Length: 123
Image (tube, rainbow, N blue to C red; front, side, top):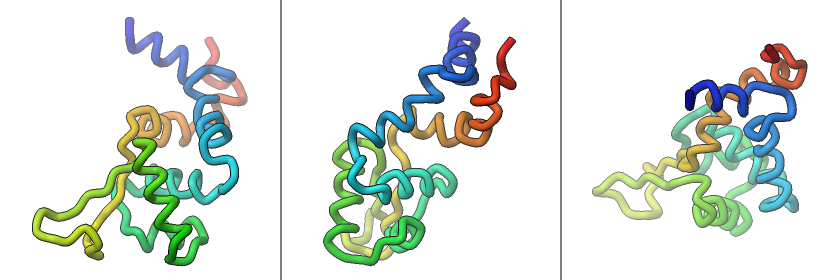
């Protein structure tokens, strides 16, 4: 029953789960597209270094990049993983998506979004 409802709300054109992704980034981080690019990259990559995220988002290291990662962490979108024996500023730090909706969207909805929009999953 739950799986059916989830499918109905995920894989139909105009469904909640198919539309919510864009709403998150319009309402929260509309000023800077790098936020969305960083989360999209992590959706494809699972764990990534700071440098990999910044390179993919087209940002150079510095204050704006640190602010972006910090903002995404504070919102609960991503999480920083630090090895237990490393400093917080270690190059061994990795980032991953921590929000369940963003994980679900990246894994199941995003890869077939064009099909959803075309109505290919409509019964």
